Length: 571
Image (cartoon, rainbow, N blue to C red; front, side, top):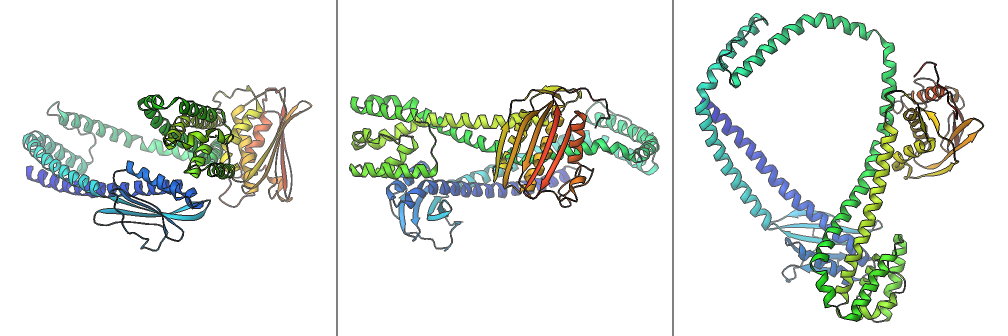
């Protein structure tokens, strides 16, 4: 038994460890490759504008930051003519390299290095390429240490396994053999009333107890099988009970229609928050450790100009479009060049990032100082704290709005009680959930009048808005105009939703509220959404009307301002 255990354990451990070793080595190499590709994309994005405006100094300055990544050995930016635009060599010794693969994007491992080549784009136009060479020395050392550790672990596990197998053989074997004989007898005779005798209160004894319980359960279930079969047959015959299940399925389907968009709407601000937190963390580290020394060493006049620059950045919080940024960069760079400022474009780029786009002449003396690059870099870092916090605030507000809308639109009124609710708020919640589809090409026009709150089944009305808005978006094929009006008309609160989609054929418009009728292709609609919507509105003592022609379809929902309890058949 010990030999069998050892052989099985050895075989299993070797197979498992070999798989884990090769899997992790592959993961190590893949991680190195992915990190290098990410660095190539990031450096390429920072150098894109420099390539576009043929300003190599800024690109060289960006490549110098590769010093912070010890494993990067070579970094080269090429222009569209495959000429070296800017380069970086960790040991200072230049190396002749070129795109030997004759392709826009490639990566490979050689003896001691990982080579990565990626194109650089700006507004979908290729402006150059970037090549990174990363040393695999650290990776090789990591792999060797990992293999050594796993071998030692294998030896240790085998030693422990042998000791345990030798000590427990007699304790385990005898009860298991007894249990095996009893199992064989039960399986041959089918006698589930038989019980296995327990020989102790250890783990095997617990196993015997559970085994006897299992025999009892099998016996009881066998006896009740006929009764359960009859009950299931009776249940299958009652098809009318499936109506509520269909309605619940439609509710889940409506929620599923917006889940992908909701995930996107939440992931985007989360990414912005993560990025901003990283910037804040790095800047705070600098402020706490180096800023006091930096500000102390500045001469009085430079200190005043430095503080004025930061004050201008803090008070200018308007957002710029990409086009506006390019215009300001060119304008400011021209001013700096006219005053013989070195690195004019780089400084202009930093000023625009800091939102200092007016009155830049005030800082000409500061920029002519020999320490101007360092001073401007510190100002950019510190003002970046405010930019990052504003990004976090904006992203958190956006994510909170989506979560609030999802919570309110998907809540279930278990008590089936009416509540006073704002109809406009419910519509806005559903629009928020569909924002990912809407922003792809749908213009939304809203005309919300001040209307009173009404007594209603709030979550059921949200299902109505979901069904109508989904149909409108589908009809417009994610491109068109959506008009939403909320107003009062006599004793009604009216919700009017109009789309400029393809419309509903005249021979089908009178059937759209019929159960299981759908104008959508097979597999894209259940045909019960509008039927459920109509029932919900009628449950509120309201009415729903539709008008349609090519290019204009309008659903008008009328809800009574004073809603009396409806004692008619519920949905």
